[in-house]
Structures are given as structure tokens and as C-alpha cells.
Amino acid sequence: MTVVFRIVLIVASIATAYFMLKKIQQSKVKIEDSIFWILFSVMLIVLCIVPQLADFMAKLLGIKSTVNFIFLFIIFLLLIKNFLLTIKMSQLGHKTEELIQKIAIDEKLREKE
Amino acid sequence: MNILIIIPAYNEEGNIVRVVENLKSNYSDYDYIVVNDGSKDNTSKICHNNNYNIIDLPVNLGLAGAFQTGLKYAYLKGYDYAIQFDADGQHRAEFIKTMYGEIKKGYDIVIGSRFLDEKKPKSLRMLGSNMISKAIKMTTGVRIQDPTSGMRMLNRNLIREFAVNLNYGPEPDTISYLIKQGVKVSEVQVSMDERIEGESYLTFSRSMKYMLRMIISIVFIQNVRRRDKRFVSESGGQSK
Image 1 (cartoon, rainbow over the protein chains, first blue to last red):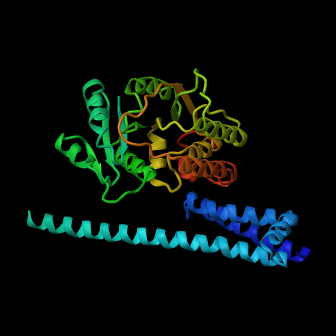
Image 2 (spheres, rainbow over the protein chains, first blue to last red):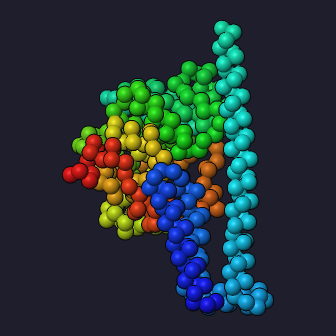
């Protein structure tokens, strides 16, 4: 990893964390949903500060270039997040359906009385 | 005494009757409200059949959402104090009086603490509790002996603040944030019972996730949060 690449990653990570914390200050996001992004930033920063860690992992997985390991790592984390978000979205959709139906049926029952 | 006992209940058909009957017959000075958090068992039916005071949430919101519902109700009904009370029978109503006595001294939040006078037993869960205590001590300088205790009493100002805001879950990280903002928090010694029926929600993996979330939240996030100015002057804190 070149020094420039590491610096860019660190700056991007700090910006991510800063943006999330800002959103929490504005009460725009729930803390439990922000934890992933804070952890994500911290992990990237650690990998950039201690490049030996990424070198070691790359070697272990048989990846020639350490940057490729970083890319793989980021893609992997984002895939997991995407997967979890899909599940959460389904659940939210289901809850909305139930709520809408309940309101409509309650209204109908009240109409009769 | 203008106290509302808020009992969030999720699938507590085995415990709810015992808990509410005890409150009704022995502690009728206090009002109570059961908040049924979209239970899939007969919790709601049992409460309605027995004419208990109950709010039914049509979908499951989780503990934070259910408790907040109770607080909104407490605020609308004009209660001066509200207390979070477990539906599984772990909390003992005899200590509400002690907590009331403490909050009357001018505190905003009073925690029913298991470990104020008594030593913490050494277990994995208590290790977690200790770590949260340390994190709060580190960021606020205040020692909370039993941060994970679910038995907390709030005064009227805090009822309002909890009722209308995002990120005010009934968890140690909110307590840490509020202490940092100058809210006065106290603890009184209580004892708790083991749950009798049903299973605890906290499995090992959930406990680990919870711990991680709490530590990150207390150390990194709560420090940078700012409090809505509408709530600052009323309950002490920064303005003093």
C-alpha cells in the first residue's frame, strides 16, 4: 500500500464517521444503525495505520497485492450490510402492511357502530 | 403519589397476571400501564379478560419503542413520575417507594441498583456490566454501579424528553449521555428476583452484541451528542 492510498483511506474513513456522528447530533439516525459505520471506519483506519496486518492477511489468502485484500475486505463488509439491509427492509415492509391493514379494518369496524 | 408504573410486555402470558395482580392488590397507590409490544401469545387477551390497563401495539417495536409508548401516555396523562417495570416479575414493587423517596430529593433519574451495597457476583454478564460501568465512569466521571438495571424512575421533565426524542432508549448509553449533559442521576439499593416463567431475551450472542453496541455508543457516540436546548434549562444541567 502506498502512503498516498493509506492517507486517502484514512481521510475517507474519518469523513464517514464524522458524517454519521453529525446525523446522530441532528437526531436523523438511530444509534444502533450507526454502529456499523463507526466500526467500518475504525477497521479501515486500523488497516491503514498498521499495514502489516493487511499484508499478513493478503499473504494468508494468497492475494498478491495488499490493496486487493483491502478491496475484498470492503466489498465483503458492504455485501453483509446489503444482505442485512434487505432483511430489515422486508420486515419494515411487512410491518407497514400490517399497520395499514389494521388502521383500515379498525376504521371499517367503527363505521358500523 | 402521582406515579405510573410502565410494564412493557412481549410474550409474557406466563408472568403478566402474577405481576399485575400483585401491583393491584398490594400497591394500589400507584397506577400502572401494560404496554403489549405486539406479543404473539395470549398476553393481550389475558390482560383484556382481566380488565387490566393496557395499550396494545399492533406491531412489535422492541423494548425501547414499547417503553416510549408508556412514557408518551404518562406525559399525556400528566404523571409526575414514571418507572420502568419488568413484566417477568424480576422487579419488586416494594422498592418503588424507596426510589420515589430518592427522586423526591431532586434527582431526574433514579436507578434501582442491585449492587450499591451488595457486591457484584462474578459472572460473564456481570463482567459486561462492569465494562459498561467503566465506560460511563471514563466519559462522565460518575460511577453507576448497576447501569444495566431495567428498573429506572424518571421525573416529569425526563418523561417528556424521553417521550418525544429519537435515541432515548432505556439503556445505559442514554444514561451516560444524560449524565454528561448534567442530568442528576442517583441509585438506590434494590433486590431482584429470578424470572419464573418463560425465557430471557438475552442469549449469549445477543449479550455480546449488546455489550459491543453499548461500549461503542458510550465511548464514541454519546460524547459528541448535543442535547436539544428545549430540555436543558428545565432539568438542571448545563444552565447551572
